[in-house]
Image (cartoon, rainbow over all chains, first blue to last red; front, side):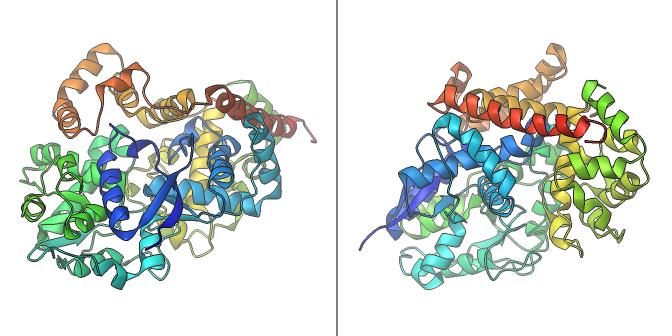
Length: 299
Length: 210
């Protein structure tokens, strides 16, 4: 089977030794199974995520993404840019669209790009990995490689914000997207029905600067998962994954709860169901271990 | 308060809406707000905004310049984009809040609360090497209010740090420099050029009658 090629924008948190390195691990595992070749954009830079605006104005921020897109056009011509991080995808796609709609900004970004001997044509689609999986492969093709169905596990599909708004996945609604539930089902697990916090905000970057306020939001997200009978939460977003997983001790202290809810990536679930080892699926990256997945991967 | 602020005050003295339209990212949208309040009701940090977005838009039209630009409000934005997708008139509210925050910071009017200071550190962190250094950014946040509070915060957060270290989602070696782009000089020159172009546009706007 021939491999499908994509121009890969991993982003800062997905690097080795960074907070979403376990996302990269599981993505690598599923790409191997699905015959996807991710060609990293050489020398890519940060997209400035969602709080860069305190120091960077509109043009410097857009220029960051313009450099990545221009590098992709030069080194991976004809390949769609694919990001696994919600913020990377959002910033890059937002930049692409704003530069397409504003000829002056586009011209100015290209003047700045001359400093690095690049020129942006701005013709490359910018996609999220979930879009690639659903649109280029489809649920049937994603189901076919399942070797170890995740039977008996109940999973709350937490889509979060930036994978969902303002762009989202084609055919899904902003208020009630169901693709994580569908993915959960084809992998043999059962989704929590009517998970009411599926698109609620975890606080994003403000989890660092406004911890109490953000933890109140996170508490509701986890509580609703428990209320729906969930064994674990699944999410596509690195910031959501970390925020919802790592503050549970603090939340337990403040609210007297007893949360111990694993939070995994969709790619972790897929890798385990596809028969990859726990290490390949990134299960050793869980601060709160997903014991049911450990067991299946160890069988 | 700085020179740019003085210049803008001089030029737009009686018309803050025009100042926002000319100088704030997506500012030309402010006048389209119809005061329905869907944005304010949709915000996850809603209860903590000094003035929710709907009120900010009205205050801009009413010329409440200092109250808007020195407000902690815009800095409560988590960039969840709820307001933006729900606005019946399609105002890019999230971008407007970011734009107002950028403008307030530029004019020296942003509040001294943690988020504006942390967000500035984030920008400095990423532009230094071209990529975010999570370890240095985290430490910069812990020690944002000085050494003694920093040590207390670091102690409080140590279990989270240990969890991230144990799972190899944090690397102590990042303190030595860590990840970054190879074309460091070119990257810095590119950012500098983009900043120059943007500041030149602002400078043109400062000229009375310009």
